[in-house]
Image 1 (tube, rainbow, N blue to C red):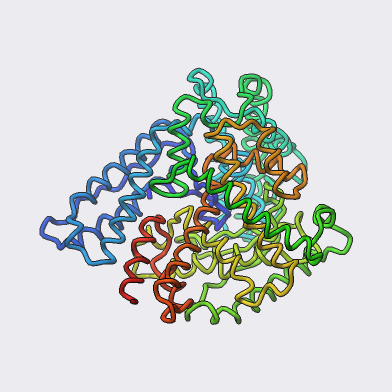
Image 2 (image 1 turned 30 degrees about the vertical axis):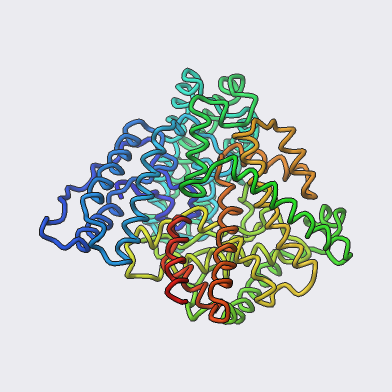
Length: 574
């Protein structure tokens, strides 16, 4: 691609890889495939060139980089549409359709000025770069330290461009919710403190004694200067701008519909998260119905007196009998071995890639016990399951493990990345509703896998499902139904026993990333519906292992394409 995040090159957790405000390098000179080439070869040529020339745009802020990104997307869509789709084989048509859907979605996104709202207390650059610093606690190579220093320059450019964009946003009527700025300020304040414990100093502390003296001396000085002369001043400048200039002009409400183009912007973000044809009002109604269904199931478990009570659940945060961090890591390692042994009951012979289990305290959303980062392309770095050291409880988070690791997100990602015959965009790209929806669907397989053996463990899974389902109601309520913060909080608390800090953070999350939280619930509903339909149509011929193989073998894709693919498989199986 035109720019590749320095953080990704370090194998760091990247939620939104960023090209920041730096001018992109010129794309490599290329030419279209020879006209005489077969359509299959033309398609392969276009898809592989796109992967090399693409610009990662999720967190890009500068006008020039945005313009270059849009040009790349339009150019490759035009090249794709010049290929006669009907002459391709089934897999070629699937690649064609997935690629076309993603390019059209990306192009539509440039209609809306997301770059004017750069502050994200839960992700983006202000999360990624500190996370990159924390992950540099282990000794690295000289080249990796140099890439981290380049990332520091990238971070500084980003903060300056963010301030410029927010100033323009004020003039154009695009301002962030005041609550999100207030949530970000203490984070920036901590990051701007010149104290030894500041996460920005972590790479300096990790310099290995075994490194050659000249390299160690150079890097020691460069890393210290990067923190003192670049990172701390840039972080303080952004904090002061938000505190003294932007906060008073930030908007009181949370809904995206309050902004110019807001309703159509939210409708787009819903389609981006869930798929073509998704409508906020329909999702809101589905969510209301599903919440009531799950609520009755949770109530039945409570009345059985075997699930945790409301009071017990509230107190179940870092209680005295919670295991130590090392014990928790060991428990999840053993759980991974147990689940792997049980997989053949529901899944075929595919073996997931190795993954590491590590502790972190840099997960910004309360109530998140585990977080998964897939292996990164071109980095030769294993996937990682992060255990949130601030959320360790007496009992392991079984449902979250199945969702994030195996057979959830890691299993799905492994199968996708191991398909070496697929074009790289299908091996390494994601589809929100497919990935998040599969994770929740996998968590609900715990009883069939023999992982959930009592009502308390079943309660965990239902609680996770309820959390995703409530998002269908609250996210659409905030952004398309005109809900206030008070309404959203009241609904959330009425459906779940949830601590105040976590409920406030969830509302802020929905406000920060409109539509994104819909992917989990809507995706899982689609997987469940496909399974029910296959069981009904195939009857005694239905094989759960083959069903899961067919779902996963071609990688993540838009739900509409998945439904069409699975419908064809069902008809062929009959």
